Length: 239
Image (tube, rainbow, N blue to C red; front, side):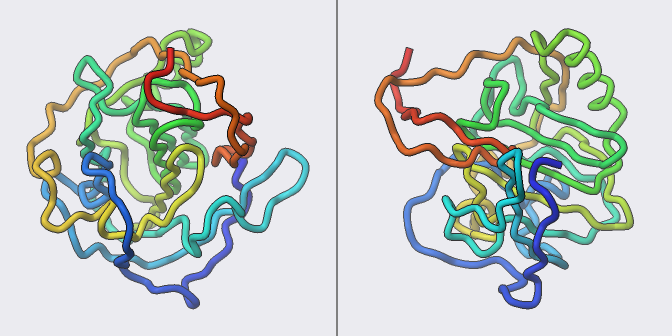
């Protein structure tokens, strides 16, 4: 795992959702819908962790591009886990690409844009899952195609079931891990309309898009997958 061994901060951080100020994305994936069609606004959080990035040489104790003390949360549930509802469809009825799926480790990475990387947009990392056979099959097909076709799923798609009744989730935004406990972003209350609208469940293969990059330079940042993004600015209106 490129993120290394997470640091357990359960006893030093708030084991619940938190309220912070600042702007929010009205279309962000709602983690409240991981557990089913109806948003769960008071989840059972049983663990808090700080992910350790890895630069390919040695572990990085903390993602210095992030000020969050918690970047991974653990839930307890015996039910099925679903792809979160999102206000960002990526086309053909899909909401996420499956960038990575490992049956042995139970690790699954979903991307809420059409690029085959974790540099731009929302990336959702899930661990400790018995991953659904359909996802594993689609991912094997994408690997066989040398990633010219990627597995894609809709919101609400069954991802699998937790191992030992527990699973973990982390979210990266434009490559940087952020706190998944923040209510205004991932657990909106009242839920937005897309979080209460039933998903049309579908899956398949789709051709990814290349990352659109502006020529304006910016400070490099950790990508959340063990590498560092180049000094580029991902701005609107790129071609």
